[in-house]
Amino acid sequence: MKKSTMTIAGLDPSGGAGIIADLKTFNSYNIYGTSVITALTAQNPKKVTNIMAIDTNFIIEQIDLIMDEYPIEYIKTGMLYSDKIIKVISKKIKEYNLKTIVDPVMVSESGSNLVDKTYIDSMKKYLLPLAYIITPNINEAEKLSNITIKTEEDMITTSKLLNKYTNTTIITGGHMQGTDILCIDDEIYKIKGNLIKSNNTHGTGCTYSSSITCELINNKTIHDAAINSKNYVKESIKQGYYNTPNQFWKK
Ligand code: PXL
Image 1 (cartoon, helix red, strand yellow):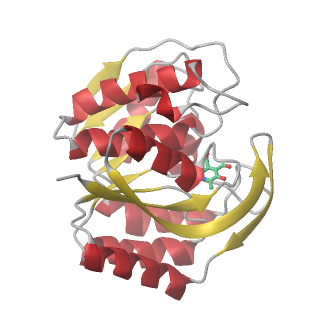
Image 2 (image 1 turned 30 degrees about the vertical axis):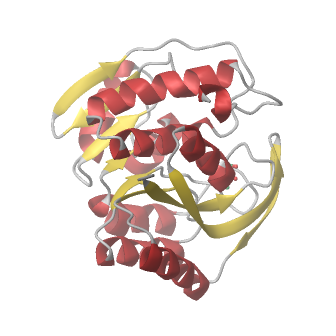
C-alpha cells in the first residue's frame, strides 16, 4: 500500500517553496501527499509581496477532513504565519498524535525574515515541545535561541540549547559551510557537506524537511534520514531550474 503524509504550510504559487515543493518531494518518494494551507502568498523566487492568512477554523476543518480519511503518522509543518495558527495546529498535532517534522519557517507579511517575538515565543511554548524533529536553518536557529551563530561550534551549542524545547534538532548549514548539525538528546552528529555554487536554492528548507519526513516514513533512522535528505536536496539544487531546486530528479 502506498503510504501517506501531510504538509501544513503556505502556498508559494511559483512552486519553489511551501506546499508545492513539499508535494513534489512526497511524489518523488512515491508517498501520497496531502496539503493543508495556512496562508496564501504572492511571490516568485526573488520576492514575496503579499501574504493572506487562512482563517484558523478553516485550517482546522482541512486537517480534520484529511485525518478522517488517511492513515497518517508523520507530517511536516512549514510556514504557519501567526501565533494563532501555531496554537491551533499544535492542538491538532496532539489530538491526532502526529509525529511532526517542524521546519520553523519565519516569513513576515513583507516576505522578510522578520517575525515578532510572540510568534517565536508561541513556537517555543506550543509547537517545539510536540515536534519529532525541528529543522531550522542558521537564521531560524538564531532567532529561536538568541545565539549568534558564526562557527560550527556555535551550531553545536545552539542545537543543544534548542533540544531543551524539543527532542531532536537538525540545524542545516546551507548558510554556512554546508555541514548540518544533528543533535539527538545530547548526542551530536555532523552531517558533512559542501556548498554548491548555484542560485537554485529557493525552497531548499521546505524540500529538506519534506525529504526527512519521507525518509522516516520509509523507516530510516534519523541519522540516515539526515544523510539521505542532504543528498536529495543537493541533487535537487544541481538539477534545478529558475532559482528553484528540482525535486523530481529522483524519478
Ligand atoms: O522558504 C520558506 C518559505 C516557506 N513557505 C512559504 C514561503 C517561504 C518563503 O518565501 O513563501 C509558503
